[in-house]
Amino acid sequence: MLGDESQAGQVRNCPCCGASFVVPQIGPPPAPPSAWSSVEPSLDAEKGLAPPVVLTPAPPKPPAVPPPEEAVVHIPCPSGHELETPRDMLGQEALCPFCRVQFRLRLEDSIEYRAALQQREREMGMKWMKAAIAAAVVVVGAVILLIGMALSHR
Image (cartoon, rainbow, N blue to C red; front, side, top):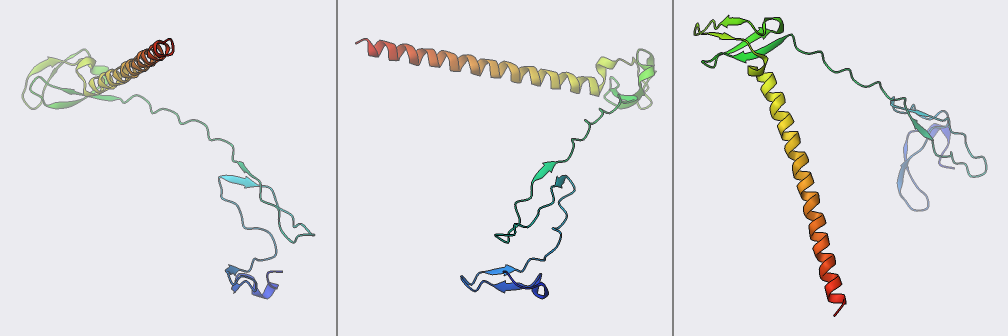
C-alpha cells in the first residue's frame, strides 16, 4: 500500500529505501495525449498494480493537398527589374514600367521556372553522384576481392 486516499497527490518517502514518490490517486487514470488512444487499465487484485496501458496510434491524417499553381509569375525585364505578371499574359509583349523597355513575357524567363530548373538539376546531380559512389564502392570491393584471391593462392 502506497498511502491512503487522503495522501493522494502528496510527496512521501518510501519506508524501505527512503526514495521520494507521489502517492497515486485511486480512480481513473489521467487522459492520454490527444494523438493516442488508450485501453482502460484494470487493477490487478493480487499485486495491487495496474497493467501497462496499451497505446494505439490515432488514425493517420489525410495527405496535404499541394498548393495550387500561383496565378502570377515573376519575370525580370532586360534591364533587371522584376515584374509580377499574370499567367494569362505569358507570350505577349510588355513594357517595363520602370525603364520603358519592351520585351516578350516568357515563362522560361520567369524566376519560378529558373528555380524549378535549378532544383531539377541539383536532384539529377545528386542522383549521378550517388551512382558514381555506388560504382566506386563496387570497383573497390572487386579490387579487394581480387587481391584477397591472389594472396590466398600463394
